[in-house]
Image (cartoon, rainbow, N blue to C red; front, side):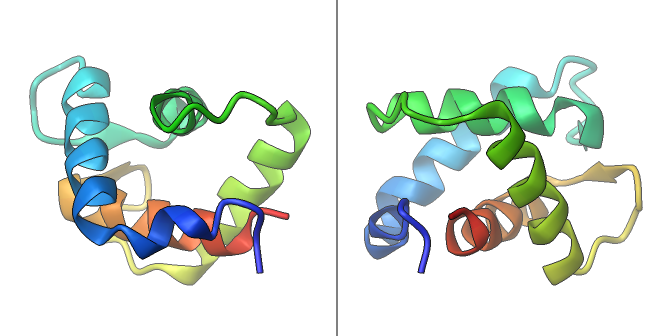
Length: 95
């Protein structure tokens, strides 16, 4: 179980925060988030829950693990619902 597992308990708060974070990082406003932006989006999302003790290497490893656990329609982008599913997978896989 990951150290951020408690975030998954408040589904509504996590969903709202995921949606807000997605909109912030959807720079092209095409309702998609590039995988290259995931590290920044996840770090921002964690900060919104007052979590600042993350290590970049752990974040990157957990991102790769989470990407293996979800189905994406496009291998280089994700939509808001995929980002939410990705975030839940990230929470579970983060040490």
